[in-house]
Image (cartoon, rainbow, N blue to C red; front, side, top):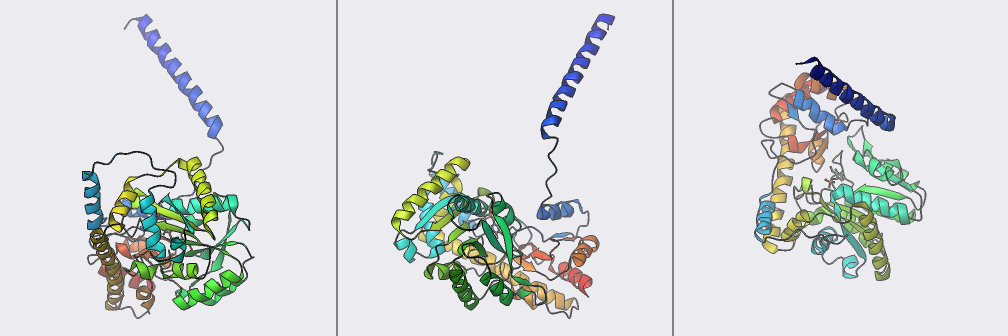
Length: 428
Ligand SMILES: Cc1ncc(COP(=O)(O)O)c(C=O)c1O
């Protein structure tokens, strides 16, 4: 290479490096102050599990259903509905801001019951949402704009980790009422009742409609009756999060009992509904938000404002997921097939709970593990302390969240004995 071309190359390299340095400098100056967000607790659990080389490793941290062999499960009824939709060669046009109307109608009927007085009298505003999380966010956004009360929301302690983030993003302060009793590994109903009785009037309170996450502990119907009475007395706005309808008992009617009780009692509740778990539509992001109103005129205004909020957030929701749900809920045969699939998932979880307790006994544990079979839904609060969780992860390659919660969906015939043995070893 001649001296001239060597110099040209050097000069070019110099220019490109200077340019890069300038670009880097510019970026640094804009986002310099941004700090790393705290890692998601559940994501961290899965990361630890992925890195572990032990062939016996178990991940009971993830909140998604798995079949007995630990594989993600596609409901046969959902597969069939998808095939039918695909063969209909539908277009991909936009829907209105509040989404797929037939889906919203059917979803509201599933939650409140077809004959519910609020549906019969058009007192519900039900809009499609980006699953349960999006429903909570839309409800929070509506409250932030229109609720003439305290911008404070009361959650059960503990609650799903994302609740606080969602409401904080809409300017709500999150506070807690007592819920879990570590002594009994059950519900602290007395504490719950006491705390709710002291919540300032016109605040917002959130309940998990069924299968409380993370504890798997729900109030009994008699306890719910007391709670609805206290909430009414305190003039609390009740926000229900129903992420697991049908998933707890296998019966969608039974699992909606608390929501329906509050509605029959005259509460104008807000409801976040999700089809992630009960139809296994996690990634499709299908849900609804419902706001109950006291008259039809109010309904029209609330709907228009909800549409305005959605328009400003993401214009309109996606269309594929609600088509699947509408196909299933709107037709008797697909619906009964889905109910069968749903019952199958719920039953597998119930029998995995029993198998875990049986295997703990077989491993020699004399501790009382009854709470494992008493709790419902996907999650189980084992009662393992943070130190025991650390130990079981480090010494037995079993991964769960630090609060001792396991996803029972991660327990199957192949790993239950190993899991039980490890649980016994760290708790004896
Ligand atoms: C209690 C609760 N609410 C809401 C959600 C949100 O789920 P999605 O946004 O997938 O509907 C979850 C998911 O785990 C949950 O456990």
